[in-house]
Amino acid sequence: MPNKPYFLENKISDDNMIQMTNSSLQKKIFTESEIVKELRKLAQDFEGKIVYSTSFGFEAQVITHLIFSHHIPIKIFTIDTGRLFKETLELKNQMEAHYGKEIKVYSPEMEEVSQLELEKGLFSFYESVENRKECCHIRKVKPLNKALQGVDCWITGIRSEQSLNRQQMQQLEWNEKHHLFKFHPLFYWSEEQVKAFAQKNELLYNPLHDKNFPSIGCEPCTRAIKSGENHRAGRWWWETGSVKECGLHQ
Ligand code: SF4
Image 1 (spheres, protein in one colour):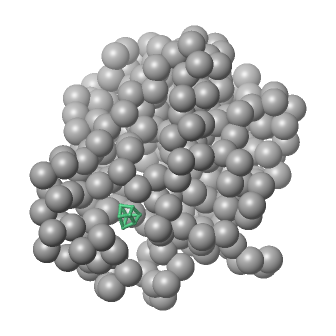
Image 2 (cartoon, helix red, strand yellow):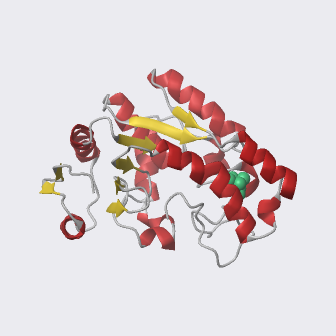
């Protein structure tokens, strides 16, 4: 593990300390000022090696707003899979203009995408979970691996209640795959809290949220949800029994 000093007043040295930190958090719902304080502290502890990944969902807008408006030195990046909604791409440009800051873009290798499309067509992901994971791997996971090279701390907008899979996660985690810490500052925020914060601060947001798209990914793999469906029901909706994740957070 990177030998970094403090997190939430505790010294992080091993897995036990991560467990202790999580249990001391007791499902802590961070306030706005606490998030700013912790992000500042982490930015100091992991200077130049801390990033935030945005997908421009409501949660992402909250964290991006806090980082940009408080000038916290945490780099923000996104992954442009090549299949995103135009609303998402437009929002990225609006965000940069609004805050006067850059959101770095990582993209898949075009040769790999072309090869996949040549061999299996443009919509192979509808045919099987394996095909879908293959596409996610090329378009999302590999660019993410590139974005996380040399990074020691990764901030995300994950919330526990978004899915059963996410309920198994912890607010602070050690990620062996990328060899870094992951911290989810909004982990115990409710959807209502996120939306109330966005409204109060008049945050820019993806207009698709107003059309029943609570979770927005690639265009061909995201649909609006119906009343009573869970937050991520519109993602890869044709799959049954699979974990609704693209491999970024596994
Ligand atoms: S969400 Fe769909 S289009 Fe996007 S990378 Fe995954 S399978 Fe491919």
